[in-house]
Length: 362
Ligand code: ASP
Image 1 (cartoon, rainbow, N blue to C red):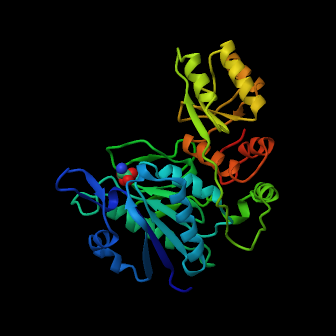
Image 2: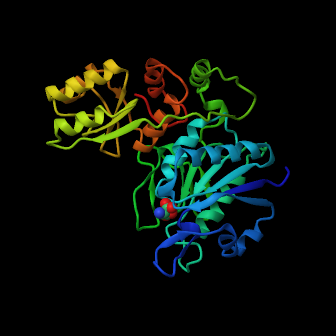
Image 3: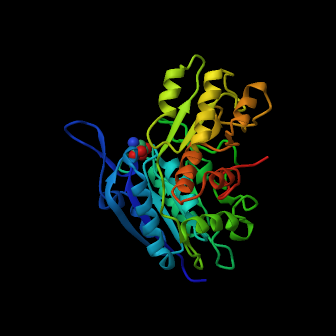
């Protein structure tokens, strides 16, 4: 087997930050500085190249345009590398990972996203470990040369997680991410232990029908290998319920100009108060073709509409089951589906199937 080759895409985040001497705030800095802090990179006896995507930024400032640039860079370099490592701030990393997992159809190479809680130039940094192990995972192959993990993943603090299953849970500790409803795809200890039973190898995917629906909608043609879907629509709102939430507030969100989808963060297994005004608002949204997806405020477990009387009315008003998806996953999946010209019915249908291993449909 030839030696692997890896492309690092640097976007910013704490991993490459330095302190601004005037404000004392951390700010994203350049790749050269980051690279100088990791002389260990020379110990990999294979090709590692790096590219900086625009100006390095704090990931709180990311937009879908930045995700598109990442996908474009992967597509342009796809045939020249065996794997990709994306260095990214932790704040919105789970959104980036989820979005990329949907738009990179036919991915057969690893895209490992990582970052750190402490800048790589600091003594106790977690950045080196995260970066070096991510490179190792991106380069890992089976004896037949195929990628060990041909998925978009987040690697953080010894765990490799499916990207669209991951949420940032900690702004202080090194263990910053969690995949609540799906087992890690690998655990790094003395050895890197891959969970090959769960990794989504190309032959295990059943996403072709979904992508064919998109192509029918947007007139695209399927080519061999990687197909990237660059369209998106961000006319989405998130509404978190709480006891006593007012009709006026819900109504103003529901009436937002151009709204195409509303993510409703409900209680427990997908429950909401049985207020007539809420039922009316949901009915109006349905009549306007606005999609409403039910996700739970509970991180563990799944939405099960109809289990309690307090979710029956949601079912009756055509609210879609978000199952065990993360919020980041639901938002980015909607952006992706709505951007590709599907009808409301098609979006509803595709929200209820797993495209990239993001939900477990009961
Ligand atoms: N604010 C930083 C960012 O998301 C936090 C981090 O990287 O850990 O870019």
